[in-house]
Length: 193
Image 1 (cartoon, one colour):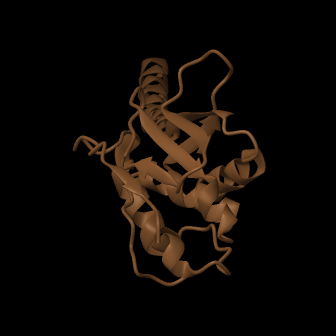
Image 2: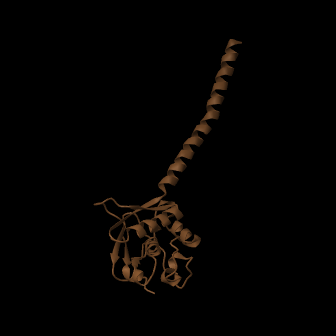
Image 3: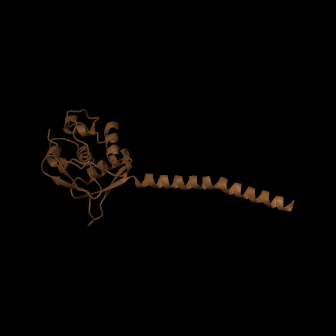
C-alpha cells in the first residue's frame, strides 16, 4: 500500500510539473514577443546643429512624427556622433531627399527661409521635409489636412500633423523593425509653390 501511495504521489508530482511547464513557456514566449516588438522600433538620429533659428520648429516637427507613428522614432544625435538625417538652414526654398532613410543611411533636409519670408509656417515646413526623409512624396495639390500637400495648403495652414494615410505609409515603410528593402531614391525634392 505504501508503494502504491508513493507511485500516486510521483505521478501527481509529474502531472503538476507538466501542467506548469506550458504556463512557464507562455510567459517566456510573451516576454520574447514583447522584446521583439520593442526592438521593432527603428530609431533615426538627426543633426540640426546647422539649422540655427529653426530649433523650435524642428523639435515640434519631430514630436509630431514621434507622436503619430509607432515603429520609427526620431532622436537628436549627440554632438560628434553620426546622424542619419542632416537638417540645415538655407536661404532658398525648403527641400529634402526622398527616403525612407534607413539606420546607418543618409538623408538631408534643407529648411529654406524663402518660404518663411512668404508666410509659410516653420513647424509645418520642418514636419513636411522630415516626412520626405521618412519616404513620403509631395501630394500637391492638396488640402491643409495633408501634411505632404506642402505649400498648396496655403500660407494660413499651420497643420504639422500627418494624416492617417500618411501615418500608415510611414508605418508600412518601417514595418518589422527596418525600413523597406527598396532603396531610398535619394532624389532631392524642392518644395517651391
